[in-house]
Length: 399
Image 1: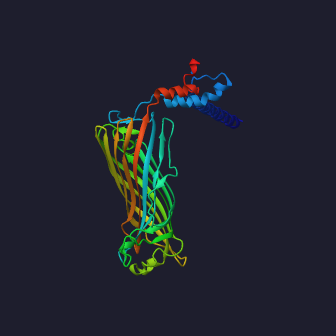
Image 2: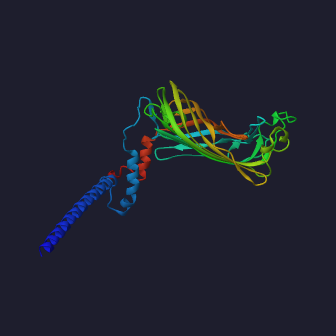
Image 3: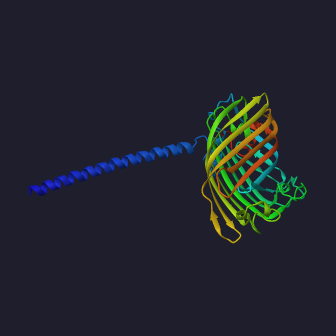
């Protein structure tokens, strides 16, 4: 009888402890939930934005969003070195041309075939204000070579330039190339004899991300975009990672055919598709020199990584080369005049991969861009507020 009573006492005591712990845990969860709820409400619910009528409720998220955009922020950079113009309306007209190429290098004969698309100059338009930044290229183009075939292309290059991190993203799909170095092969030794390859197609994409160490005094935006202006000369080291993938295809035959057969080794004469996967790390340095309203900027990053090469031959058989070492070069340069209202100048970018150790053959690819630009910044602080007021997004308490 005593043992049964002792057992029940222990059971009741254990049950009481469990109930206490559950209550304590529940109280802690309630406290955390209440704190989280209060934080969200304090962020989303603003007392001075009206909420009475249906119109007020409908306009509330729009007014809240504009209020967040217009609120004063503490700069995370040194304003004696960098001026941010994000709150100005900036309109820019760029005239650009992209250069893209793929070089097929025979390691046995030390010969190259250099494939290039027949690109145009394009006239574009960029728009930037406090809310968004976008650009587009209308159907205004000129400057393609008349005797180098027709190239159909989709070419997207996006640069995300932040204070600490900048990322270049590119995608290319080119169909229709010509042999840029045709005149190196006898009897095709004049500049007029250009071999056109409408069957050659290249699809490539890549990402290159860099971290800027001295972001408080050095601005990549001020160097290669139109949002910031570098007021004093400054520099910074950078480190990053990069990745690219390329599919290089000859749809009608092999890459090497007449009149080039006698200049290349036998294994390469049957190759009609090459796939390259590259990944690596890089480091570099950027510098911007400022003299009054003249700004000269340059940045160079060099990387090393690994490349995996796969290829197919005309008999549909697949092959693979051992993993090889590659180098990567990413370079930018810009020169511009900028008086904070009007700016003009030129910028150029270059990005390429080179195989350092490989067997049979290597493939070198590059993409570069040259841009001549003219821009103007409109100070919309007063007029912009009038527009926002007319839309009911600010000064709603005075109505």
